Length: 165
Image 1 (cartoon, rainbow, N blue to C red):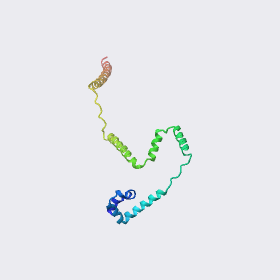
Image 2 (spheres, rainbow, N blue to C red; image 1 turned 90 degrees about the vertical axis):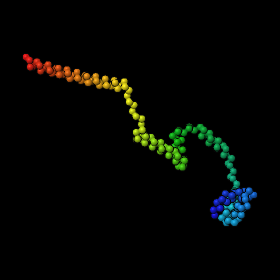
Image 3 (cartoon, one colour; image 1 turned 135 degrees about the horizontal axis):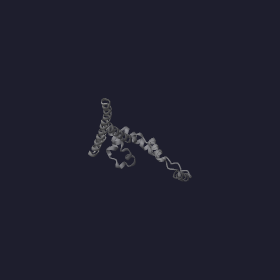
Image 4 (cartoon, rainbow, N blue to C red; image 1 turned 60 degrees about the vertical axis):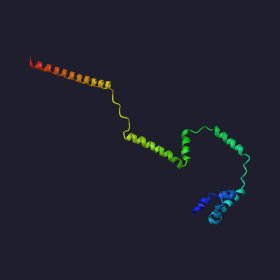
């Protein structure tokens, strides 16, 4: 039975060109009932195909085909969304698997990269910017100190005047 698989490939050659097949294959097919039944089935199928006649094409086929082609050329082209939807709708799922796997891998890489903190580190400000910020803070502190001293001087003057008549 294991040898039958090898000889099943030779059966069409036995039908179409028996001289090209080895004698070993011929003796196996003659001895094996399963292979002989497959050969007879193939010959019966081919004899039926020989008796089959293709139906005649209607006389207006060419005219209708040309009219249909003109209609398709004159029609407005479909939008990219409609083309994409039709392609995804009628495409077999086996052809979609690599596309979906690639999209999922990209989504995981982008999402995982954002979650894992793989974004570039923040840029440290230059020395000039740092110095300007420090001077601004110092100026604010000095302004606050001046205001405190001014308020102390104002309140101190009123207390001194009340103590010395």
